[in-house]
Amino acid sequence: MTSPVIEARNIVKSFGGVRAVDDVSVSVMPGEIHAVIGENGAGKSTLMRILAGVETPDSGSVRIDGKEIENSAKASIDAGISLVHQELSLIPEMTVAENIMLGAFPTNGGWTKTKEMKKIAADTLKEIGVEVDLDERISRLSVALRQFVEIARAVARKPKVLILDEPTATLTPAETDYLLSMLQRLASQGLAIIYISHRIPEVFKICNKVTILRDGKLVTNDSIGDLTPDKVIDQMVGRELHLDLTQRRPARELGELVLSAKGIKAPKVNGIDLEVSKGQIVGLGGLVGAGRTELLRAIIGADPRSAGRVTITSNGKKRVITGYLSAIKAGVAYVPEERRTDGLALTMTVAENIFLPNRKEVSPTGVMPKGKIAAFAKDLSEKVNLRPPEVTREAGQYSGGNQQKIVIAKWLGRKPSFIVLDEPTRGVDVGAKAEIHKLVKELADEGAAVLVISSDLPELLELSDLIHVVRDGKIAGTLTGAEATEKSVMSLAAGEKLVGA
Ligand SMILES: Nc1ncnc2c1ncn2[C@@H]1O[C@H](COP(=O)(O)OP(=O)(O)OP(=O)(O)O)[C@@H](O)[C@H]1O
Ligand SMILES: [Mg+2]
Image 1 (cartoon, protein in one colour):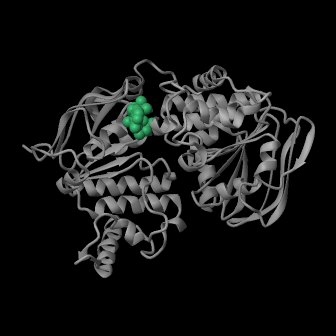
Image 2: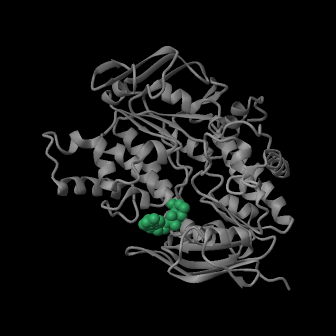
Image 3: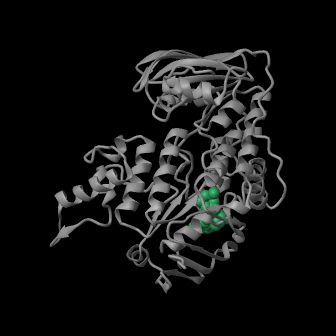
């Protein structure tokens, strides 16, 4: 009988009053793909950081091949544990090869052996079947390629246990499939894999065992065969959840035109016209790298455009958008893709983050009573189901999915006339995702014009009244709500003929 390669026993970790991990034990066999799932803030990332020795538990132990290891990053790496963090941790100004070998440069009396470094990096990329130029700087790569470089870095250390914290959050369906089969191949060679995801179908596709966490506690530790997706979701949430994630908006009459964008050109955007009306939700589909984020940023003036004209009409007033500031004045709210860098001040409190863009709404006189700020922030945090709803905590102390909710909350207070969302539920758990969908639809019902990018096809279909599919910086096709299916969107995105769709 084989024994577990990694075994965590009775791990406990508190932050102030919050028990992030509460007496959790988990073990993984060689060749096993073990899912760890749970709602935002359930304690998944904290537990993984403890296994990787970058967070110190209050109590509990970690064993590799039956032997207890010390709690330090070095001890974990030496014992063969590699963690791919939830947030990308590459150094943008360094090359692919340097990043893969980060922290493990082969040296010769203090000098980096460049040739040897490149060889190991090249071999690793080959092993995982990813093609990318070793000398390219990370800052020039797509998000998906960065994710694969991150994985290469973990694999280059020849680990016994590979931990991936939401690796598919930034990937398209095709890239995700590629990653999943890569993991199956690595597991078949004996690697133990711990896999975190909010996407339940992925878990059922590749995992052998499932550990479910709720509020830091272990709920189950089951073989996949004993579970169904419904059972998993109920156990994650701790109550029966009746989600209908396929509920589309009923067709409606178009209101007045809010956004008019004509002939937009910018890097990666090759001449696009776009309109969004009051009460309408327009979706942008396409592959990662197709130019959707670039288009959206060029429209709202967050990045310069080389050609084109944009106007936004709100409250009967038409304004020409020349830059981001004029867009904000015209009532634009922008929820960016990269929330950690673009969307939040991590060292400020939740209340401050929510209050800053809403100063005028809270306090037209400029006087800002603390209680009022807190009440305003609390109300919005409850709307997005922030957990815990403690607005005096620093934003950086919240789990990844909860940070996304803070970014959304901060824009809701403005009652925007035009709201632009880039991958709004990336990394958000199933329950909160349904809440955010409801909110976006409510905003549109109340009269906002909405433009949303999503690589999550069911989400795109559920939210959008109209979908433009972007390919190579152009609109490859437009589908009305009734015409749109996962298949029709994907074929347009990939540039294939519609077969039987
Ligand atoms: N550095 C920290 N300081 C204070 N609290 C923290 C810190 N890190 C995590 N927490 C808290 O610990 C709990 C667990 O967070 P964790 O990041 O492990 O959740 P998660 O399951 O990974 O969630 P997600 O799906 O959103 O990534 C949360 O309540 C979080 O706010
Ligand atoms: Mg996490």
